Image (cartoon, rainbow, N blue to C red; front, side, top):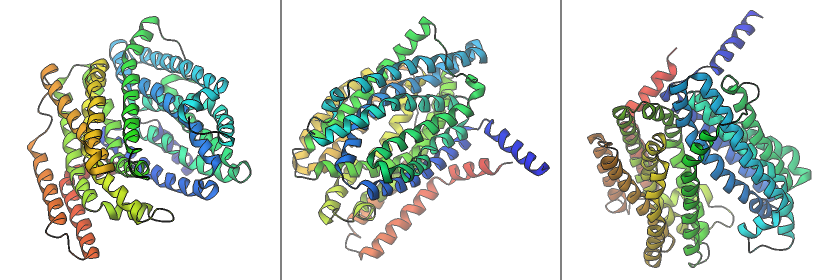
Amino acid sequence: MDNVKITKNKISTFLNSHQTVISGTFWITFFTLSSKLFGFIKQILIGMFFGTSRGYDAVVIASGPSDFVAGIIAGAFAMIAIPLYLEEKAKNGDESAKKFARGLLGFTSIFLALFGLLLLVFPDFWIEIFAPGFSGQTVILAREYLRIFAILPLLTGWSSIFGTFLRGERKFFQSALAGFVISPVVIIGLLIFAPFMKEGGYVIALEMGTAATGFFSYLFGMKIWGKFPFGMLSNDKIKRSLYLASPLFISTAFGTISSLTDKGFASALPAGSVSALSYSWTIITVIYGLVTYGVLSSSFTSVSESAVVSDEIALRDKTRAMNEFFIKALAPITAFTIVAASWIVSVIYQRGAFNANSVEMTSVAVVGFSTMMITMAIDGALGNIYIAKKRTWRLTSLSLPFILLNAYMDWVLMGPFKQGGIAASSSIVSFAWMIVLLIDLKYKFKISKLFSAKTILPLITSSIYVWLFVSPLANLHSRAKLALEILIATVMTLFFTRNEVRMILKRITRK
């Protein structure tokens, strides 16, 4: 009994502990990888239960309004929550910061509940916007599912903002664990409800998983918000929160417009081009997310802490360390993705109706998108500086011209390169956005030297790697060539990131 009690105490102590940014990065990355694995199992079950049925089309349609608007509202408030929470904590103490957390949760909940009410009362309006081409039984099912989804924006918002405040208190493990819970709960829900509720079972399972994430986040953060996590904000704090979150609403909407623009241009290309872009983007974002999500999520707390006390040197050094890691880790991975795009697509997708032509179309788009893995990571690190410094309006205003640039580059490149050109257009725009942010940070905020000479060697060797396998070794036997590509890319990645890997392992194993 004593051993059981000691074990329980150790678990309780760990669940209430605070972690460093490095250990937080490890835990977030670990649980993200685990979540991707369970997500893959979930997709297999969805395919097994529903296939490409009309009912599952209705579920996808119904989830669109909830995901889009809840993502904009909850995402924007979650992004500004950490800087404002840490500022309140530094100026007025822990109790005032906790009161602010409860107030922001209450204020955001009102927004999300009102939107959920609109989904419940006017489902046809939203279906017409998000799926104007559908009719008949599919629309009837979508209407039914959308009404069930009416509570999902609130559940999603709670999960997101609870998790954000946990990270604000450096409870990275707790936040990552709560976020991981959604996938296994959805799988259990599918196995229970799908056999007799069909596609409606997935709707229920998704809400169960989201609610479970929110519930565990709430439990882990009770020392922040107490038993009742909702409160009221003063008028001044409401105005400030809205002022800082509004540009993030707009920039998220702009990102969606750019995505719709890409799909619009792709719809004029041969059949399958839109799907090829979607499949290829999934590959890119999964690889990018596994490498960068943990770093960007955990480091944002540290960056915000430096911004609150106006420590520009620490802000620069932390951002430079992130940028260096991203280039050292992602340059070899990007190079491998370019030279082995067809093999990657084949392994992941080539079965059933996904034939050799599908592989070719998708792999071209993968190559076009590939360099975005590096630039998106750096864009995220640079953008976090603006959010941490609460300069969200400036960040959004700088992004406005890039919607037009994206459309123009799509128009220029889609003719000669088809879907590969549209993908490459996004990569060019992402690179241009990075350059603009670097220039603005240097001249407006006097923050420069965000890269060092350590990034030169990974970029040069990765470029040589691509040239080597695209030109001199292009005709090498396919299996030998693939083995060599994997071996060299792995060695390069481990070599360039050896210090970071050693540091993470040292912190994790430290007693």
